[in-house]
Every structure is written in structure tokens, then in C-alpha cells.
Image (cartoon, rainbow, N blue to C red; front, side):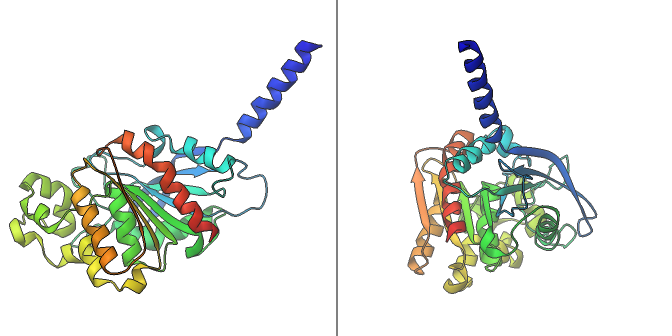
Length: 299
């Protein structure tokens, strides 16, 4: 009898654990007319997904550059385990997370930074706004509209999260950035040529050197310039969360953004924790960033 009861309890517990797990689906695709190819993405579906007619808020989870891929958040960051735990604890409403592929091709010789290329030949940003977001809202049971939509990214993806919040103030309720790749004007000027070409040659124009890199395309995309040009009222439409390691090369840019936001009277969250530009830092920061977005969703 005791063995039967024990087996029954173990089965119930196993069933409860299974119910507590969300699903990560890699290798999802959307056909893009703007990019003239299929765009890959990974999607996280929360525990209990598909059991009823419920609709969910969505977080666009942007990956980093320098070899980053759309499934990194799950393979290296354990994002699904963080999400499952917060949802099961009632600290987050159940949500869907979508990570689009930010590389332009398998070779990944030139970063996109989730921007449009300066020559208009490759328009990742337009694809995201005009095609991917509408596609997700048609394909999955997503609550449409700004109040149920957020963006969270690391490094290059952290840049995109904040840049998009300023470029499209009516698109996201919240934007969270971990170790966002914000570079000051001087850092861009001083960058070695090979590094410039890989990171920004397509977005701002190839072959540029020194102050010549600070052209119209640069100022249209640099977060540290957008924060001065976009009205405080527009920036404040999106709740902002910024977290950068004190030993990170991007700390100067993140701190400068924080100071500019403060001087303009724009409420935001900013923190500097001990750490660098790596997965241990991002894994340790994901829960706080996710909880911030959860509070935004519940407002």
C-alpha cells in the first residue's frame, strides 16, 4: 500500500512539473518580402499554452552580436527556466517570447544592429516593424497593441531595445536592456577600421574613418543622439530598464544615457552591477529585467 501511495504521489508531482514547463520552439520561419528571404525565429510558449482560448502579452527577446543567434537566450541563458519559474510563482503573467534572427546570413561578416543598411539594400528594422510583429500577432494568440508588447535585449539586442523604444514610442510598453552596446561618439571615432566595418559598415556606410563616421545615418540611429532629439514626452511613453556591468566596455555609453535621461527628467531604471560583458552577467540579470516588464504589463 505504501509503495502504491508513493508511486501515486510521484506521478502527481511529475505531472505538476510537466505542467510547469513552457515550450521552446526553435527553427520557426516567416517569409519576408522586405528582406526577400525567410526570417528565422525562436518562440517560447508559457506553461498551459494551448489549453484554452487565452491570449498573451509578448516580449521580443533580442540576441547579441559577434556570433549571437536567435536561440542563444535558451541554449546559453536558460531563459525558459527563468520564465517558467517566474510564471509559476505568480510574479509574471504568462507570456510569449519571440527571438528573431538578427544576423543577415550564415557568414555573419557584418552586424545588422537590427538597423536598416545605409544604402537601403537590407532593411532589418523595417522587416521587424512592418512584417514580423504583425506576423506574430496573426500567428499566435497574442494580445494586440502596445500595452501588451515589450522588448528585452542583450548587447546588440539591448541597443535595439532602447533604440526602438525611442524611434517607435507607441510600439512598446516597456524596454529592458542588459549590457546594451551603446558607444559614445569618441569610441566610434577611435574604433579600428576592421571593427568598424564589421559592426557598422553596412548601417552607416563602408570605408568611413574618424569623424566621417558621424554622418546622417549615424545620428539617425545612435541612442546617445536620439535621447537628445526625441521629446521627453515621447521617450517617457515606454518604461525603460538599463542594466550594465561595471567592468563592461559599454559601461561608459550606458552611464552617459542614464545621465542624459536624468537631466531631461525622464523616469527610468538604471543599475550597475559588478560584472562584465558575458553570459554569467546576462543570466544573473534576466530575472530582474523580466520582472520589470511583468510590472509594466500589469499596469
